[in-house]
Image (cartoon, helix red, strand yellow):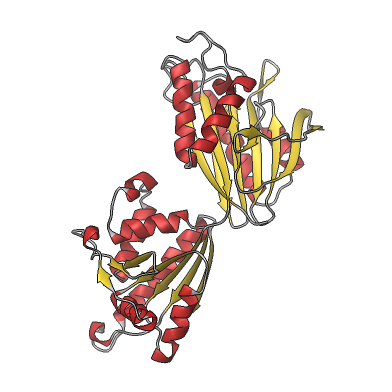
Length: 382
């Protein structure tokens, strides 16, 4: 069963330290997501450097196809020991979205929390000795509604010597997670909530670095986006049928495209007066279509927003077409681009179809960006 995952990350620095001694590395590819959390021995700059070296080395090797044994051996040969202790501990979680399965490897790190709804799930673990390190490995199936939380030991120690004078352990936090994780839909917001709770337990003076990675499993989100009318009016019906006949969210980009869709569906095209913006033309409304926007300007600005790393919260706060489109693009896992190749003659300059060339470039750049983010993207042209 194919699945999709949302990942949220939040960290606390040890009080008085500018850098966190823990590191979290995330790699998203089409078909797999890898999350690694490493806790460097001690705190501060040295711990940060070694934990970052651990995560970046391991995740890069895994995404290149290396098996765990090779990764562990490389880390064992590369990372030093201090007073006989490993310089970095780690947990590696690989999620295979096509198969709906996960593979977890843990070395001297708090046991991962795995649950569904408000109950923990029992995960069988196998103890192995790899390159002189005791590794606990497990493989398990995933389904929509499952969640996984990876933490560093600074989370489990939250409250030690703090204002609450209580030392939460794995069992105590598992009860807290079973209440909080299912109740907060957004993985990033959930991770922040957990980190804030730990900070309160520490009395806002964390005695150790604390890191949280929240992984939420759900069904894939589908997005279909129609951009521009077909080159021949004979294909107008096919293009609209391709958009409306698919499951998932439906988006129409372009004024001429919107008029074509309205004509084929015999539905009125209206202007959305709530979507006014100084930079972007207003969005439209067509019954049965989730979002209707202007064409190339909206697409180009949406790509700009994505590249600059605007947060989902910031995008959702805006009502213009580009921000709304960027939200849908970020939320989607499978995207189908239906691209019309019609040339708008009034927009040509000296016989050169500059508008269609610009549209092609923007669409290609947008597709490449989405693929780099691990999304599954297809395109059909009319």
